[in-house]
Length: 107
Length: 119
Image 1 (spheres, chains in turn brown, red):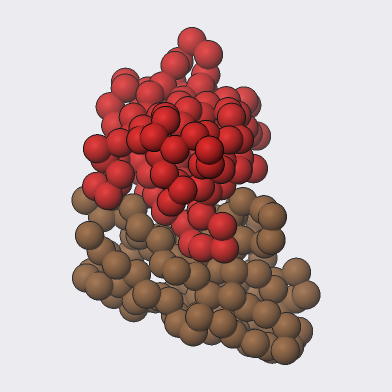
Image 2 (cartoon, rainbow over the protein chains, first blue to last red):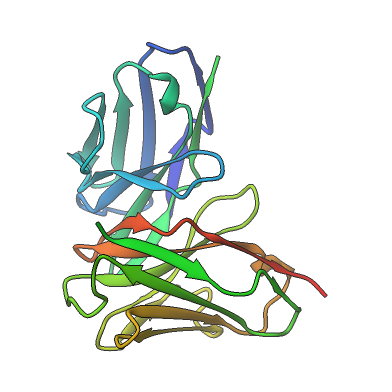
């Protein structure tokens, strides 16, 4: 099973600042990596798929990069609505796993 | 716009079977373009993929749950279902159904249904 680790666990930033979230896979997942945003009491929402493609409705301030084992989600300038938990997810051998999440909270 | 809605009991007794249904609207489980999946989230914790089904009835399960999980599809009702047997308190979670895009990503998700395992 491929294990995903995310860092940091919590990121405390102010609106307007840049956020950089990391996701590392225990073995290569090529570019089969997605990012989700989850707000309290809501279901997760797909933000990025195939490592760097924005899903429909994802603002341009969100960008994804990486391949193989190391991936990054960048929020160029935090909007108040961006404070949430972010999960990465991979698909390999038709099995899926999620990372433990990074919480982006208001400093 | 495809919408998914989970339904089922909110309380299940230990050792019994948890049963949930996901109703799909605005799209068809028979489309052949997507898989249909269940994911859960224990209180205050992260996401765990449970498994998926295809309109043909084929399935794939998380190895850690495989012995207890059955996911099935009912194309006539445009629904798919989850059964989890021999539940314990560790199975207490919000259960989400979701469409699997391009066999790889989950979108959209249902709003989730909270299931508590308790006597």
